Image (cartoon, rainbow, N blue to C red; front, top):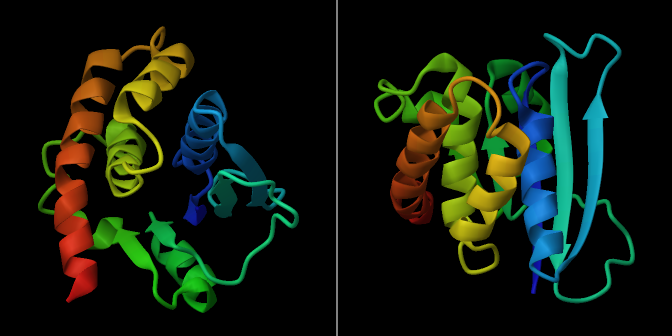
Length: 166
């Protein structure tokens, strides 16, 4: 089993936080993981990318040219990731506007984490993700909103997977 995940957004949207939680979850689940963060000096406002590989075997080379799952959180990042889309499950926040209407702006990244987690549910367990998420975010304000946003994202993962198959 090998999963190649590309997370993309603007600096400050939480792309690297999502990546950190996914990687720690994979590691806690006994899987091999590689993570290459990619962001410019501007950090906030510039494009932020996270290249993740999760496998049950040793990861020899961390880079990839085709993602299995692609999260797009901004217009700029959509442009930067076009070349990684082939047979990819694409989660584009622009396509989820109706589903995110009740999600607070500061919890949008956790909603996206929920969607990606749902897509990767055969590899990463939601309970382990929640545990890692709580370790990282549990002491911050808005924790209850984040939990709610994560649950909403999980419930929308099937919707995203179905729309990618058509």
